[in-house]
Image 1: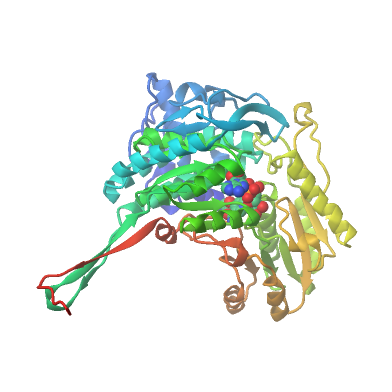
Image 2 (image 1 turned 90 degrees about the horizontal axis):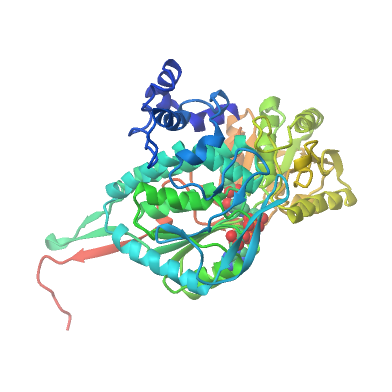
Length: 586
Ligand SMILES: NC(=O)C1=CN([C@@H]2O[C@H](COP(=O)(O)OP(=O)(O)OC[C@H]3O[C@@H](n4cnc5c(N)ncnc54)[C@H](O)[C@@H]3O)[C@@H](O)[C@H]2O)C=CC1
Ligand SMILES: C[N+](C)(C)CCCC(=O)O
């Protein structure tokens, strides 16, 4: 985990080669007008003149240089004054103090109230159960205006060269890095995940933009020689107005995973976040505008299923990329089928994690924790079916339970919290319901699985539970077959490789899978046999943006991240050129 986070925060070896670390460590804050890792001087917010502000701005830009736990904590109460587009709301670093003030739709380069809508919906702070404000679910007219605005911007953007688009995306990445703490704080407040994890999400987000900025300039066609001097060439062209529909578990990151390749390929995007987490994506929209995308190129439309349907059914929408549940994915595909629109579906999972007896036990335990408890277990690719070879079942179980009991639960904005609140009261009850059912079906709760009420009075209505490890599990139990989307690990003993592969693949899902073993041949043999789109050997749930991510079977199709995603946001045109005369057969 540490190594992973350090890599995320530093940009790996590159950061060190550029000398970021020595610059950050060796010079005073006020002198640091420029980060060596940053391609340009830190951008000053309009109206901010003082050298102190510049220093603060730089110290945040330099956050890429040090691992998160080594960073001085910026004074968050100062952030609104230094952020050009705030306040979207009353910003604060403290739980229970945030109030939503600004509209959450974003169209033609500005936050707006939708022109029509079905009803107002409340936004909750999961850490406290408090309502932070309300927003309107957009109607059909608003959706249409967003599409028209995106169409106009597409005309401008799609004519730009890849290098021109690249520069804008790099600038957006730089601003995200600069505003890392503010975005992570917002994500934590609205989602309930720990600030520690939210910072990693923001790092993966700007890395995603940087990665696709790199690929934008490399988009190219092919030249094909034909007889008689004739030839053909191919053009990789944008699709048009793409729709992104996201889930609530990684609100900012999912929006970046969709918009970065979409924009790199020359498309416009209309994004609809989950109504449970409507806030942080508006920051992304503002950042794109600030970075220089044409007004209307990235619009945000808020709402639920009905708003999503208006978007999917709109005749001027060229593609839909969806992250969410299987039942909704099916509906999206049906709607898109009517307009012959390509879709990318990132759906749920019930992924296997296979631990052989020759594994390094400490790594296997760490891997199982990473595979189950990030973001309160609300992760689609989690390895929730933990198959453990019988010889080490006892030792593994004892250690994993001990480590799970030590996970610090509580106020997600505190530095040492590692598990925050689940997304909503109803989701918490659903997860606890799975645990009751597991007990009825014969599973044994080895730890956790009950409500957690923090001592801090302001958190007493938050949606907390203790992470749970279930033993005595069988493959036919509901907790082993269905996606729980909460902090619940099921341990299943196995004896042979052949047997475990059969059982691991016996699911309708196919998003991810992992194997821990010291036997190199077995490791590769096992992942080759796993029916899953994203496989890990001796690790789990790391997310380098260079790697394609997506599912097999009912976990969906299409890929996000990696070079592969470029294929899903572009189309190929072949141009055949005749250099001679036309020979007609008629
Ligand atoms: N594979 C992946 O990358 C991920 C998959 N998930 C899956 O998502 C689920 C949790 O997320 P939820 O937000 O509850 O899923 P959901 O499927 O209920 O909603 C996802 C999004 O779709 C929208 N939506 C709902 N009905 C729609 C319709 N008829 N037409 C168009 N849009 C519609 C929602 O408003 C939301 O923005 C998990 O169960 C998990 O399986 C979540 C995160 C990542
Ligand atoms: C970032 N990661 C790999 C932990 C999860 C990404 C997929 C999701 O949105 O659930």
